[in-house]
Length: 88
Image (cartoon, rainbow, N blue to C red):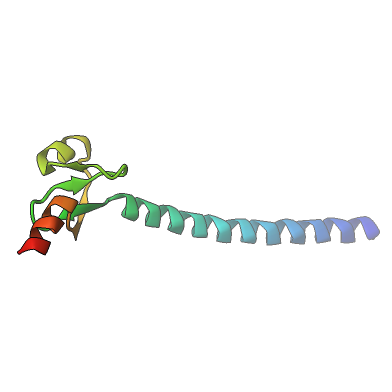
């Protein structure tokens, strides 16, 4: 009788662990999806349309697209255009 009770308790523990694992998997999948969305965002200058890469360097749009075909734009102003806007 004790052996059966122990086996039932172990199975219940395994079931609980499986539920927790499934919950963590869903959370991880959601975070991975958010990361993919963020990786697809690009800072682009609203003035000259140059694009800033992950290292902070600015590139022509055409140059950047050659290396990054899956892109979503966000807008910003590059340092050169910022200077031009300040002096206007």
